[in-house]
Length: 417
Image 1: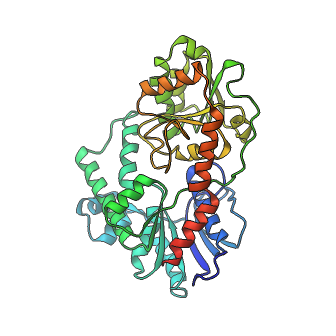
Image 2: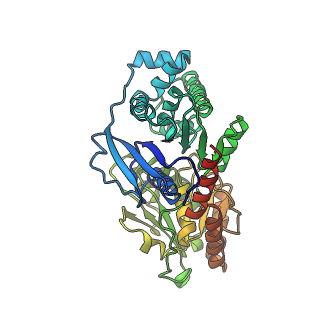
Image 3: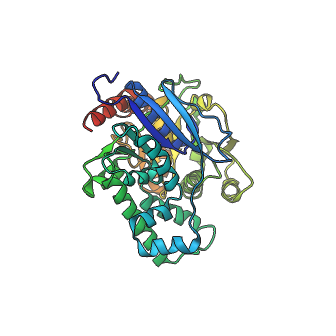
């Protein structure tokens, strides 16, 4: 418990659904809350909800959390004003309000608390919420940065361009990236602490000169190892597992890489001795239908759809596979595998940001489709010490990502405020 720190109350602002399962954002916010609880803080959780999310159940960590729901009322600028703000790039408030419509409402909620408790710590999830800190010079503010928007937006554009022609010119896109980067810098300059989830993003902030940026890796809600329900490669069959919505951007990118680029490189003998279990939401929509079409030549691919409890699936899998080169949203699934005892085969890009990964020691990493296929072939055709890889991965998690480690990192950071 944290007993010597001068603060005992945290004001925590987010609009993310909070749960120890589901999307990575939900889990990240859950474990951030848990880290504060583990240090003995009381939390006032100001949760912004809209009509779509108000009926979604929140699953909060046990502890002293006072939940306050606020109806989300973003102040959307008209199209002309928003384009003008992005074109000009100033004044700062005009630009921030254009890019982050929720900002003005967050400021209102913060001011109602800051006027009475200026000494408290104010924690913001994502840049749109953290942008409110600029209105309160001297505030003890924490910006939990999940992704660099100036980088992630480019990955989103690349994937969307596969579906339809962009309405924005290349000049407009470059200007948006420049403005997003400016906003990142403004928020960083007005934050007491910046929590980065990934090593390369933390390095980016450090390179920009922000010594207040801290690598705060994500822990996992359920740290209990899953007992195996099947021997490794039982009956000579390598069972691969892929997790994530088939109709989601990240899942689509991963499966397109695996089935469309890697599988055609495998021999018939290798394909005959392996199977791929795909677990994630199916829908009659563009991404999903395209994946199902690409998968038709491969009877060894089985689509499960959404599964409520994936632990029994994990207990039967030999390797979790993560493909793709345009997005990094599956880092959470790699972390989950490390905790629950299933080795991972991933592209280097999709594993980027997870500290301590070593190819062949605690994970299998492939730099391109050819190498990915070579690793799969070796796993199918030769003996592999899966126990060793899984054990090393879990040891890395306990040392670098665990709940205990997160609390210690947070303790040190807050005591320096």
